Image (cartoon, rainbow, N blue to C red; front, side):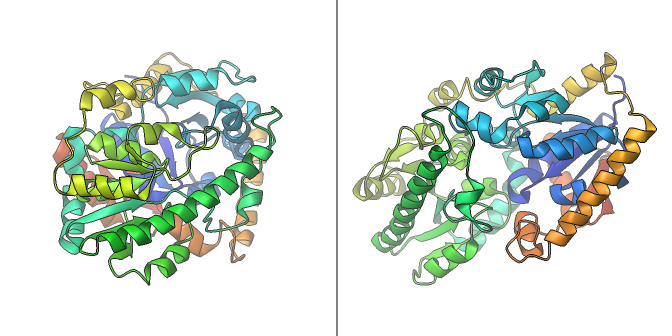
Length: 453
């Protein structure tokens, strides 16, 4: 196989993305391809100190075009996948918020969760033929039966600390936002009648109402089953204080936001959500999953996670379902039916990991000589100056208390990670897969690691 440039794997939200991207980094390193992995903001702000590589972006909205231009000018080749590509908005809204003609021009390729996502991107009015590869996503790799032992230790620690519990996953970043003004953050610019910018205002109002129903449900459910422990896990973009203040009055309810969600899904007796990707993840793990839907909307609901869950419209239905599952009256889920329901959305081939398929694509492209050429010196210098100015601007923003670049918010997104923790995760991957024998991690800078052999 031809050698390719090092991978650069930015992680926006540690508890959501890091483990999966570390698996991808290990697969790359096993094949002799070094991989830089770390906090997205830190990587982008320090990009001039990293060698030109293959940058795996996590999105390609219009606001990403500036950093993509910088990366291309510095000699990086850009591929991407969308962390929100599996559970996405209606196409026109997705195009408005998550796709950009300018950003697509910078991309050498897209990695798709499955055919549904591929077809949606191809339907974008400004789609330019950027190659789309149906590889699946490494986040789904970690849900496979042969990889679940990777989380055996954290699952044991959770159960030792909490005993049996019911997990309540909150996904209300739009209505319980940790920073900024949710109305401003969610405005769109689409032109169609159904999906105009008023869609965002309606969606926000709907999610605010749904959030209040969901919080009310947690209180009443905890009161209905006082002998059971309940754990709320807020979305990483949510305000934690809102939930902590609420839980302070409920003795059998606690708030937890540490670590990857997968061991929490494996450790709980059952999980309750509304329109959250964790509904799909829980179903794939075999965890009983309930979707609480006290109100419904054909326009604003996120149908796929709810469709693979037991749907409860009322509190009484929810109580009955919790009772049935808790007393083992509820039969186990039908794995064949689940696989069929997700067939168009997820690549789930048994013989190869999604991480391996992604590296296959990159190596195939390199062997065909399709990698990007190095930009001229003047272009690189201009990109370097722009990158340094951008990094300075983000540093200035970090002094604003309610900014996404403020230290407290960045640590909520990416808690400080030590080399020993990364090494321990690599060791677990090695033991579970019986691979990555000589793969190791080293510290490059704070919150940035190099995975190599």
